[in-house]
Length: 295
Image (tube, rainbow, N blue to C red; front, side, top):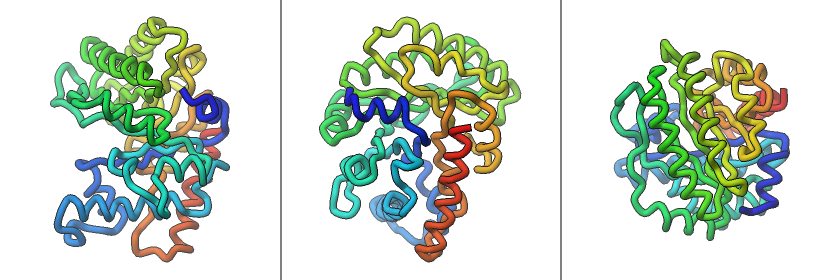
């Protein structure tokens, strides 16, 4: 584990920017950015357009370590360049931002009220590649739709199984068992989730560190105990479909929890904006998210 990056993530002021839209979510992200499907005719062209958007964000004046601790990257982005330099190197060396990699391959169909992760073939090789490129950690997402104890137990067990593999590779996993914000049993699911995570945390080796990326809980400060666990570097929050203002308001009520927003970070940004308009809108989002993360 890179101690300089670990200290930055664990103790720095700021939030984690999520720039990891993958194949399934990319068209939606581009539409929100003002680019519809008629603007590209292949998957390669689609990913080129989303990379242009990410580069515009990463090179913006306010996308710096002053308010941003880390950035989660899609696999293609990790292997790409920005201003002639590899993306992970650019983020850390030029911006002081710690790079993470999304490693999950999407979700299985819903069962027992949850969606576990699909298999991850070639994971060991990917982790070694990421480490070689200067990536500090990973991010892997599951989804919980209902307060089903069996389903939630399965999600958490799978997440920690992957996390142990990531730790063994010398990286820090961001464990993300998202609870659907529209779930009729959201609060109950979160109570079960917390207890299952605590059980798994208590079974980790002392030298294995993880981060947790969780839906902002219905009951404020529910996850403080998790944030204080000796194996947890940081607890971060996903925006989960809340508007930027709503997500920031909810987050500000939760101690020891900082943001890791994707859609909320890019809310209101469009390809048609001038650089001045784009940078001003991004600065506004960054400032709101930063303020909520330090509240």
